[in-house]
Each structure stands twice: as structure tokens, then as C-alpha cells.
Image (cartoon, rainbow, N blue to C red):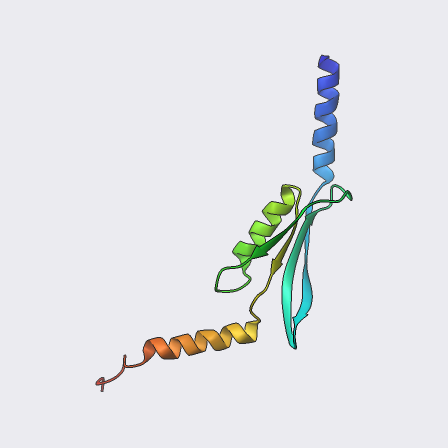
Length: 110
């Protein structure tokens, strides 16, 4: 029994040493707008796995969302973090918000 436990432990540890979370950027289109998504998976198995769609916060697809996709992949999921904003649209949005927030700030300042 002890030998069996050691063998199972060895197989588990050695197979997990070869496994690694892989990721890549995937370009896709929404209408005419080109967006980039982030796909993460663990290459330890080729068996079918459940998929998870990861949606970012209002600032767009960033490092935090990618890290979450990688963590989900390490748990055995295939994770796709979709970009719901293009960089151009996001920069235009930030520019507009900045202009709106700064209205009246310099009024009366000489």
C-alpha cells in the first residue's frame, strides 16, 4: 500500500512538472472593429475541458484580467478573456471623460 501511494505521488508530481499554462492573444472582429482577446489553457492534457469567458472591468483587458485567466487555466479550464473595448475606443473614452471632469476647473484661474 505504501509503495502504491509513493508511485501515485511520483506520477502526479512528475506530470505536473511538465504541465504549463499557455496563453496567446487572439484577434477577432466585432463588426468592423478589431479586438484582441486573451486565451489561456493548461497544456497538461488534450482532453476536453470546460471553457470560461472572463470579462474585464471598465478599463479594458489588462494584466489583472489576464492573470485571472491564467489562474483559471491552472485549475483546468480553458479561459478566454474578451476585449470589449478596442484601444482606440478606450483612449477616446478616457479623453472624453477627462475633458468632462475638467470642465470649469480652470475657470477664474489666471
